[in-house]
Image 1 (cartoon, rainbow, N blue to C red):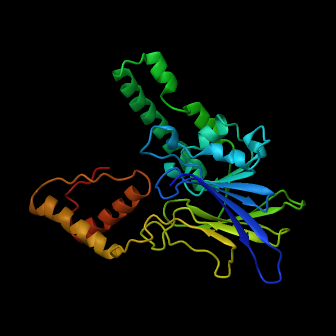
Image 2: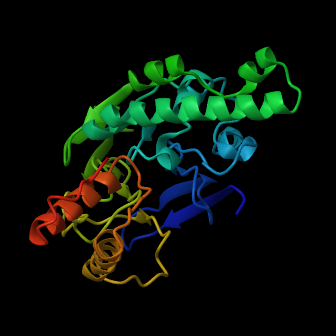
Image 3: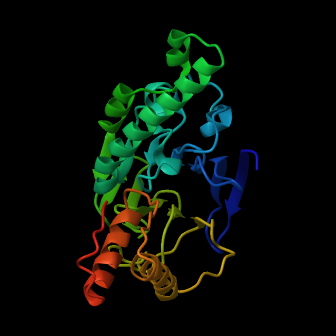
Length: 313
């Protein structure tokens, strides 16, 4: 799906029209480069996530930032177009383009993320930067490009860019109320709610009280099933929004229960390690999945008295 702008008019009986304009800069019918922009009543503009597409190396690796010019064609900087950026969690498809947006497109308005996201993100961003630089450098030099030119074009941002970018991120707590543009007609109230998924993942709820309380809930990635180290997503039971923007990667998929998936995995591991005296290699994300897997294996090892079998991580 190409990037798209969607104007929405929301009417309520006895209330004035609420206007929301949604721009899909990335993650429309694709997994990667999540970036949704919402303009509230032609007054304030919010960017939800700013991710990178891990499978691309062309211009579609980053969100379609050129679309932002549609909001304010007279704008001379990104600060005149986007008023606040909200990052849902630390996965690169949701934050990987942020250093480029701040350090190369010179955005310096507020950036909000949970405290865990603020402190974990630099680790993933720096790792991604180093790997991307090394891979691109090797490929370009194999095609005859000089090392100097290859290094110049290897990656759109540097470790220094990441450090500078993350200093601009404001950490927020669950259910903390952040008020922007206070005491003005454009006052905007932002709250975040627990999303599960990974450590620090949050949903953002934003409303403008002086514009008939027009509101948006952006979920990012979320999980409705708790596991050993994360709970299930939750929002207040009385929360109401005019627009819901939700993650839908697995919306049409019916999955087996967690208990069934775990039992199948552990059975295969036992057969390989104990019955066949083999070794098991499990590729897994270093953050989130790895911790859950270690807790699962620790519990199973104790139950099956397998302390003599080493687990290396």
